[in-house]
Image 1 (tube, rainbow, N blue to C red):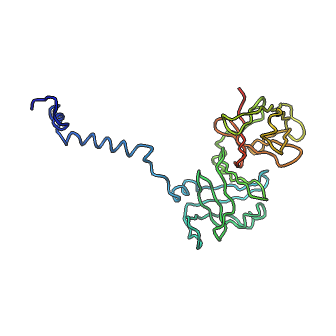
Image 2: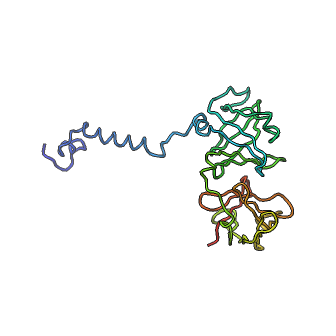
Image 3: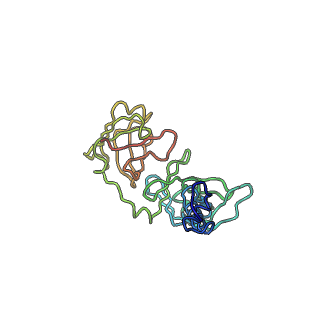
Length: 261
């Protein structure tokens, strides 16, 4: 065949010495493979798949870390109670021993995965007892209304995570609601006093961000950063992978600390 302008695509392929539809097949297969491997076409994990990934041994602790309940999350589904429209999964714990350490542990009967690898603990009725959101260093945090802050620790992940030292905090930091939001500065002092606390010196503009809390000292506790004042609950921050610190549990009043340049 003589190749000339105006031929169809299949004719042009024949002219090039490529066998028409048979030649386009590898191209089509390559396009299909690209489509299958494209991140946009990835199939979301099912609750059962997430449950199997999160199923491990954990430690349920209070904020101070001096009360511990050992429990194991399983990837085996259990029959949900009437009216519960999502999958529930089995867990195991010494309920009596755990209830002596963490009162609400007596109510825990099952669990389910939530958005962002959250871990939800449920009562026998399916009622939500506590929802833990994933933090850093193998830790999940939950805030129970009129109760306090609790943590789920994955010992395997926690052992692999680096632990912050006071020297990592010394110096000037920026406090803000978001990375590009207006900020104030906070000086983390180096001279310890009292029971392992260090002086904290926020500038005047920080009052609007701290609200009713007026922290004047800081310390590291169980891998978290605590800002403390004479009144009110301490502010707890969890270390982030980029070196910043984020207030936990997260709420509408987001606060983050980033190293001042």
